[in-house]
Amino acid sequence: MLETVDPSRDLINFVLPQTGALVEVADPAQPYVLLDAAGDVVEPVSAFFADLQACSRPPSTIRSYGMDLLRWWRFLDAFGVEWRRATRVEARDFARWMAIAPKPVRVHWRRQAANAKVRPTAGVPNSVTGRAGPGRTYAATTRAHCETVLRSFYDFHLDSGTGPIINPFPVGRERRQLPAAAGRPARSTPGGRYRPSVPVRVPRRIPDERFDELFAALRHNRDRALLAFWVSSGARAEELLTCRQRDALPGEQLLGVVRKGTRAYQQVPSSADAFVGYASIRRKRGGRGSRGGQGAGCGGRYGRLFGR
Image 1: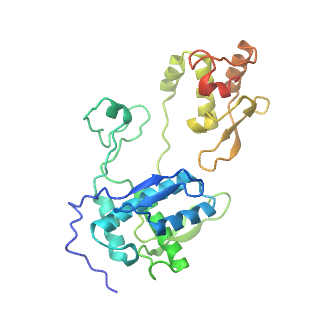
Image 2: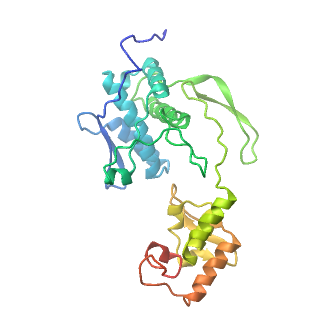
Image 3: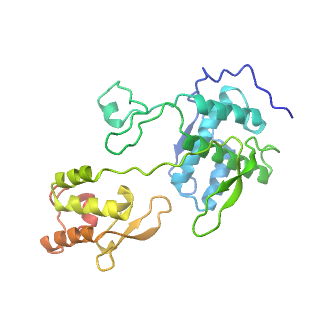
């Protein structure tokens, strides 16, 4: 069937309606549900979420998938298209709209608290880390993730016999060459036709002199040790805060953390300097933690690692 352009769709001036919602549910068997414009649970999405959970996907992944599906549901609702009747024309127009649509910028909670009306400057990189500010349009990584999620959603219902007989998000005409990974040779795989090419990003870094300034500005050895663990282990900050005293193995230079996505316990290598700072704090406190707050003592969330 020949794909045509719908002249009634003004993608340039189109504004995505804020209908429906992705709601977190206090149910381990159903962590999130998608609500449509009428406030009803979208059962096809719930079935897809159940399949993701059966494939050992964590709740954070289900939430990420749900946000992409919510965006797609709002797009279909704006044009009065039922999800089973979505064709490649809708999928193509959705991909075109995401490529040109201005991205909504969420105001930081500090600015919300202060009732500030200053909009974050788009595209201005951080002067220290080089990280770019929020872009004016959806990033290629966001669009690629969304295309993968929607193609997987329709593939699931295509296999189950509960969706359309043709996936609106088709596989690309060409086979893309993927680089070698984990000792395996390079392989080619068909990508999504409407999936954008994601550029390879250069890892960001803080200049050594700025890092030295940050390290010197810390007031307590506890904070310096935490910073050394964070930088040398490569663990996320919230993962580092899951550490307890028994998770530090100075002799092996290993630190046990709970991973964010899988919630699995993993021992990660850390620098000798981090363990030297850790040992000095332990000696100073006689192997015991403080019962105080989060100041010079080792209480609060940091106390799990430094003695509590």
